[in-house]
Image (cartoon, rainbow, N blue to C red; front, side, top):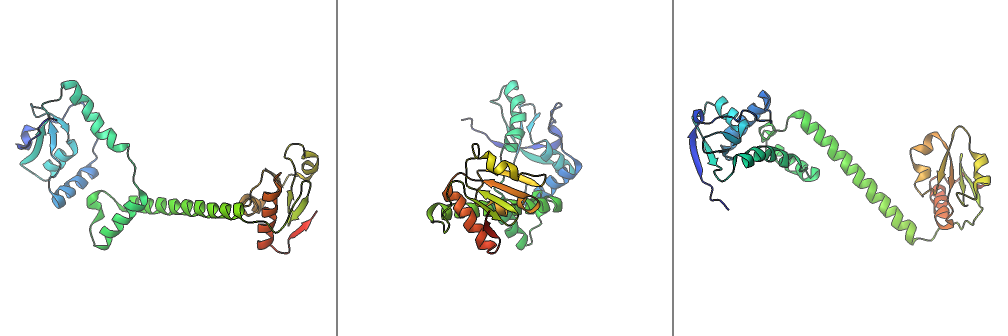
Length: 247
């Protein structure tokens, strides 16, 4: 490993790379400047031996906005010109290839906010915070739904149903149909039930009658497994006790 040393160079001695592909808006430069005021210049600019920037263009712009006379730098003398060219891109792109753990991020931001720390200093504006809160809520909901589905599945797998459907049984669940039969060879039984408002649900699970699609359609649920079909009937009867009858 190369022994890297932090030096302090005059701002006027540093030269931006002419083909720097990473852009910095005026708003972002102000954010970086606010960060430098709050935390100090903790991440040195990376340069070659001539003072041309390899990384830290945004920090240099912020330093000029703050009228700093000198900034910390690290010379990457061990890099060839080709490596320096590649590292300029890698330094930016590799950081973009990571993701936030939304739950932990929300936890950290909440702790800072409760301590009255200005979150814009670390780069989060109101719009981003609102979007983060929305994304966290959606992730929490998805996780809750997944856990609920797993618990339901465990319950169905371990519990014995009250009903005991057999192949060929046909039940009405309000305006829906539940048929315990083959999805393929049983088509003469379920096909005549299909209409313009019907929705065919082969291999239906216990959640199908309670899904969003059940609200606007007459479901024709075909489940060849008597065990699962019996649980579908049980669950529907639990919720709608007077809406189940043999067809």
